[in-house]
Image 1: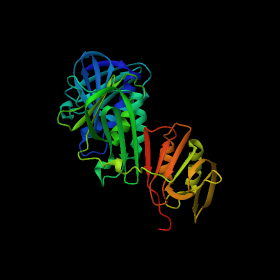
Image 2: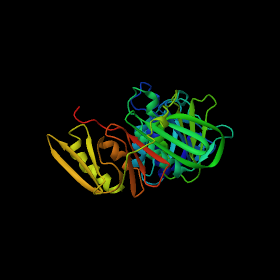
Image 3: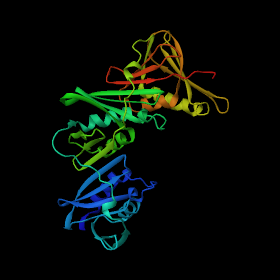
Image 4: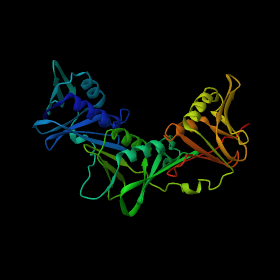
Length: 373
């Protein structure tokens, strides 16, 4: 293999695929990035067997070929190169990649490309096209609510459902639920839903940050993997088998109190409360006073002290004192961009529901915390 490309393009491509490597795997090849020529371009591939990413960059190809090299070494090396042309040549006999850029020259020991697990690319026609900005926003408002431990693998994923002219994403960890739906430009005739690992969804949002063209979504015929095709990148993810919980049953359909408050004001109050709440299981109390139109956010700790922040609010219904995990409140308030949020409550022992005021496409359900336990 003998190719040349710009340092800027190579560094950008490596940043796209680099996070899909698995440095602590028992399989050494998974800590490598595969460099291969592909129809006049250079293809970079990385996989940890759950997520795989292919990225194509413009290059001058003099000789076809492929080699796998350690990801960390290659990424760190290319980042030190000046913004000039990078010449790369792989020696098959010694499995070494020679790189030259400006006055720098380096040799990286690699592995045979045949050892690298295949990272699929889309084949044939079909798929659903989604607006990248809509998809990114939906991922940002949902993926954080997925479970981070593997006790219930199904909850480490994000439900990805397409039905009619709607896309719906949902995630839950047993203490909270986040659901976001959005319209899609091309309605689909056959609805389908799969569970995608939350890590893959977060990676998709990251690598599509500058994407302007629609993202093509396809599921492999064996229903084991989902592919997201961008302009010069393809992300492939394993799917999580099983049935996602019926989240519609979790969302309360009634309320006794609705509290509408400024999003930024409530977020600031929660961050202040967290200073004291973190010493006491993250418990923060919300005191709703309809008669005076006040919401008081408070937290206390026997070790560090206490605080209370009073906010103006529009309140309908009965007074209520309810406690939540302040981290769960901060998480959701950080991804809502509307100026006001509505908090619907029933009782101190029933879940609360947070929605952006005037929007029905986003719903966040959070379990209360019980005091004195």
